[in-house]
Image (tube, rainbow, N blue to C red; front, side, top):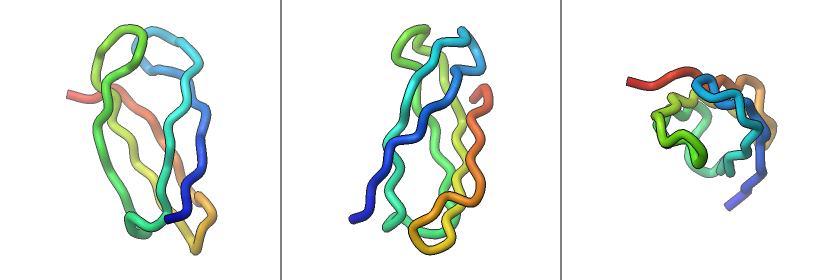
Length: 62
């Protein structure tokens, strides 16, 4: 398991947060997680090449 933390800004409330990413979950990952501050859903898209993050986005979830 290769994990790393990634900082981002909540697309809803603007708070600076971090999320733990796990490269062993596959090259292309999508998941939803609620903001720790405002509790609204955030849609994450992550792409890995080896153990390196090549794409990261945090957008409002539905």
